[in-house]
Image (cartoon, rainbow, N blue to C red; front, side, top):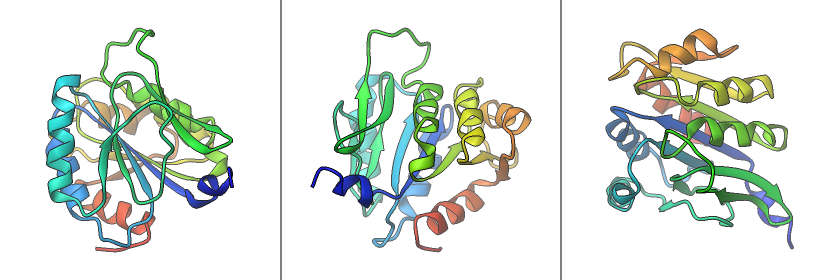
Length: 198
């Protein structure tokens, strides 16, 4: 049935990170249990040529499949996806699908704001957790704010665990109802959200 995948995917976690993010993300994914049921989409600032190696590293520590985002790919439960280019998530007859556009201009690869904003448009269809981790600048903050306004739950990493407290600090200042958690607390929250605990 065309709508079956839409019904299967009930929870999605968005993770935005820049400087210091790869180590944090590895620690998060290493904590996941086999019964973890949410879908995770990672937007880690990184050159395209490094993403295959990053995906391979994540697969080595995670018990769930980690893959690169591809346009038209349908999101599935318990899967982890690594974004590149200008990635958005939209809803169609198949469920939630990725779309990539390399014709738009952006200073970031991937663009965290664009990813988070796209999910804000469909936030009422499922449970959404948006997380801003360590990084320079403010990419992802506007998208996180939009997500919060549409009912998504948003987290900014605390100053105590952020390697670079740029993006999280801006999120703490600007995102309505944002929760501030250390990396260890973020890990616990992700596992509870996905149906398991640590």
